[in-house]
Length: 123
Image (cartoon, rainbow, N blue to C red; front, side):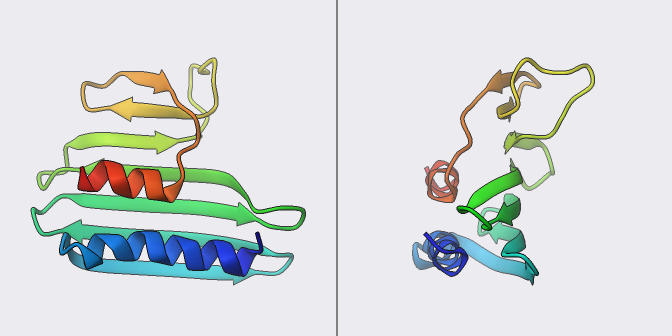
C-alpha cells in the first residue's frame, strides 16, 4: 500500500462517522513531509458532544508504518473513555502498544486500525 492509498483509506474511515450522522464537526489536518512521511491530526466532535482526537505519524519509505499514534476518545465533559497509543511511560510499561481505560488502568493492546477505532466510537 502506498502512502497515498493509506491516506485515502484513512479519510474514508473518518468519513464513515459523518456518513452515519454521528459527526457534529470534523477538523482534519495532514502534512506530507519529504521522504514519504506524513502527520495526520484530527479532531472529530460527535453529535452527543463526545470528542475523538487522532494523531498519527507515518513513515512510508519501506512500507506504510505508523511510528507514533494516539486515538483518544472522551465524553463531552472531557473525561477519558479510552485512548490507544504507543507513547513511552515513566515508569516504563512492559509493552509499547497499550490502551488507557476510563477507570485509569492501562492494558496491553495491539495497534488498532483506524477503522477499528471508528467502529469502537460508533458502537
